[in-house]
Length: 486
Image (cartoon, rainbow, N blue to C red; front, side, top):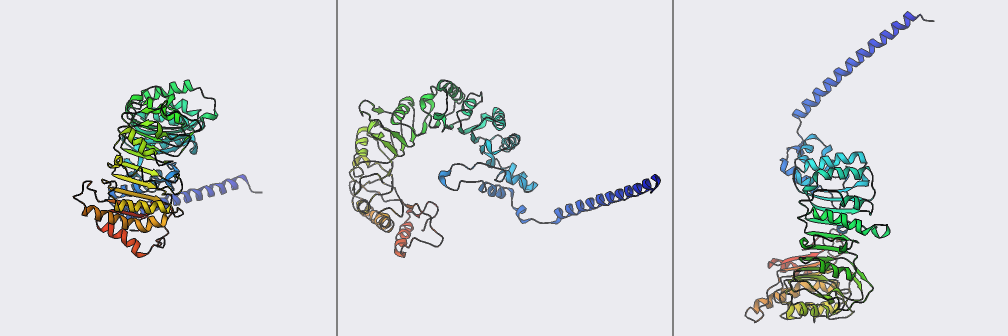
């Protein structure tokens, strides 16, 4: 058995070797640092030679976008720009932090982050945006640590927010709207509270909190509510000029028009109402409304039956019979400049030109027809547009359809030729009483995606008609929303 002295000697020898190894490792690390520094000095990274303003623009184009237009905003993570750009290299991090447009919009799903990370993310975001105005979209369904972090940060930066979208639950929304934030720059407020009907919520408490929020928003002009009636808002009605709602009844839409005296634009989502209303008893006159968009109506009555809008210039809706527009325009005396009609609910085989072929629409500058119902309709409409002195001031015609719609082939094959004829007739009839103006834009759009190299089997002469019209100076678009064939 070895003596204690021998063991101590061995330990001392090992310690000496450890010290020598540590010194050698330190020397190697020093040598490596020197080599890295020299490499960074002499190496050329082409991507880092771009001017910073070019790199900034590239970064902006890297911001995430939804896969489909209706998918809603992308909820940011560390794997997305701009946060991802901070972790590539110091040069990119500096450029990213020096590009405020990268940080002007924040889409934050509170439950998608660990609570301890949200403070850092918000601090980075608000710092990099450097005093610019902000657009915030916040999802918060439960009250937890991350929600508290959001509330703390907004307490400091709320005065810079211009557009705020809240998708909250009945638990978190009252807490948010009752907070004493300063919304001095806020011009747009969107609130979605999809589950409010399923929870026990005191409407009076919520309404009081909501009004507190609006009283601190002196610049607010646009309000969007989903499944929240405007009756919950009892103040600031006079300052709102734009209102958007969805899943309302007809009665709730009537209420909007009566409560908002200075409203200029109203976008109404799907309307569902089983009740039958008397058009005289519920008639609404709004003296200022200029733009009205109505989505699908599942109702006994059509909203336009109840309205008189003398200042209206833009209308988009889905007519259910061929008298709605003419009666509405005759009652309102409005000079429409833009009209968008979705026609798939018209009775099958309806020719339906009585509304369009009216002096009440002689002021029309832009017409968009979606889902033309039959081949008979398409052929008669195109002939009417080409040969008659119809819609004399029209500048832009848009036709949107799908490949499985009855008139698809007629729209695709004949639209350009008929609009060329219209322009020829307009040029030949310059001295006529109506003085029909030449068409300046023709857009024919299909829903389906076009595979690379495919043209839906259209013959060259069909595409040539569109190309020739484009060569004449007409703004021509022929294809899907993503891709034009001409």
